[in-house]
Length: 251
Image 1 (cartoon, rainbow, N blue to C red):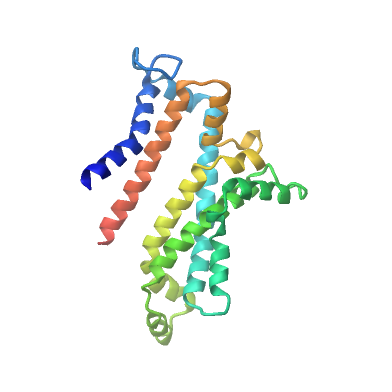
Image 2 (cartoon, rainbow, N blue to C red; image 1 turned 30 degrees about the horizontal axis):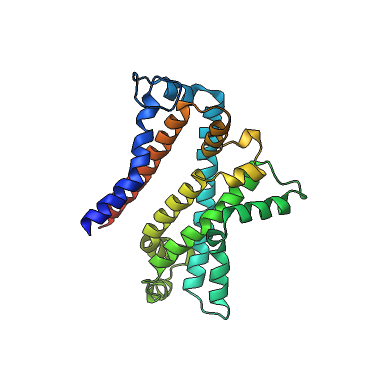
């Protein structure tokens, strides 16, 4: 069992480990063996106007979309957990549908819907679209936290004179915080790695890091792509590490 798991892990991680050293290769091509080590591809990544804009857009859109997704997903999860009505299961399925439907289908439908309205090629539409993709992850993680929530705690807070907002902040929030943090991370990661919607409804000034990497692979393969991939991998590792630290502190 352990041998099989180790082999699967190596198979999944090996391509990532193989591309990272190429970001330090002095050659202008993504090839082995490495002639000499250099940091000029990272310098180009952070100093080139094209790549700098892509990095800025990725974090701007990703963080904004994740914040919106957390708000919407949390409200939906709490509403579904604390209420019981006809059609609740159907509504839950509808809310998580952006996670089930292929992104290309969602993106084409979004482009056909927003295009005639003149709402494409702006940050608002892109952030809203990415928030829609991330909201189901927040809904699921917060709903999991709410599954063990005791409603009598809210009744006790209300009997002591606490307002609904204060009760949510002092009673509900501490319980669902792990779900909120996990949902934010998943929503941000979904937005940070997304490329199809950017292609369909974004303009040249909205290029994100994955979109720029996609274009560079088609037009001019450069080790700068490996540098960008390495940065994305490091960001992912830091995010996962932050989650583990938060979990350890709460224990």
